[in-house]
Image (cartoon, rainbow, N blue to C red; front, side, top):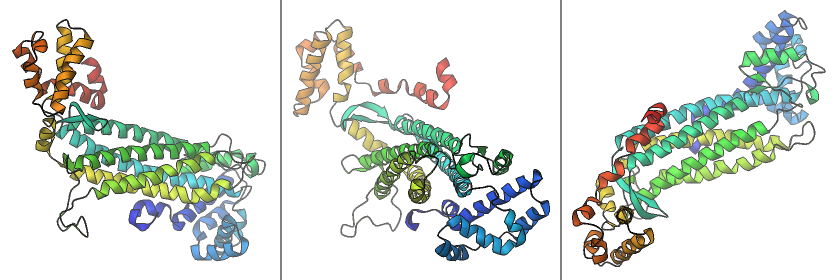
Length: 437
């Protein structure tokens, strides 16, 4: 991922320095396990731990000759350790190091993503509670439908990102495995107890069947979770972009002092951060396809997965880390305009109460088809600019034969649409309380 969309803590996980650090830790832990089992001298392990160092530049030099990254790494470490280096990588294959390291770095990354998610969830919940009863128009097909609240809108996103967090937690469990099983995963050249010991030392669990590589369905599950999270990020970003449109202006990205919106038009305040997230979400979703296609490797292993994983893994982790933090910042500073929300509620001159009018006439004994016809007949006149919905209904003799004037008046009460807001909030924020309500 380019520096523009990279945050230091996450980027460090995917640095060569951290990659080689995890490689060394796996090799050292395996040596410690072999020593515990009495298969290599404990003094050799002490020497490996003490003298084990690596130089990324030197590794690159060696790899340019040997054309194998793990061999280049072992060669460089061996140059520093000396004689005891012969006990390293004993009975192991490259994928034991590569895949276990991959999982170490993925779990490190997911731990950061989960913290990011908590920041976003905190922001969403705060704004939801702050605007729990702030009325705004709900839209279907982009057209005014019926009133809702801005808090409920935010609560829906809060619930969605709770699900995304749960998916990431499940994905972390998926990729928290360790494989130290040797060529084609048979343990023929290494004691299975080594894998168990190494897994415990690294905070991982042994892979049930590694076939030399860790099965790629695990990573497909992770990238699917990332793709879904990216879609949720885009959904919220698109909502903000729509609400910031000049004709709507119910909410707006924070516009800082000195910020400029356009090189040509000094008046512009554009939703650039949300648009940025929309673009990055498209990129993050695109990584799902290669992750899915990596599942179908040849026989016990091939390396067709390796080349794209070197790109999609760091990019997805670094990119999602950036997106979650950017989105949290947008929500934390989001400018919200209740007066504009109320103005938009009134733009259709009462049409948003059409369902209440129709149902009231049904309750009075009219057939639903007749109630719909009478309601729509007057609604279409409002669209044509002939007056307000309530005035037109009062002037309609057929309607007034069914409804008394005071009954019609009572139907145009916005508080009707907030009576179950508490119930919905309890469902999300206190599930047991909602069940008892």
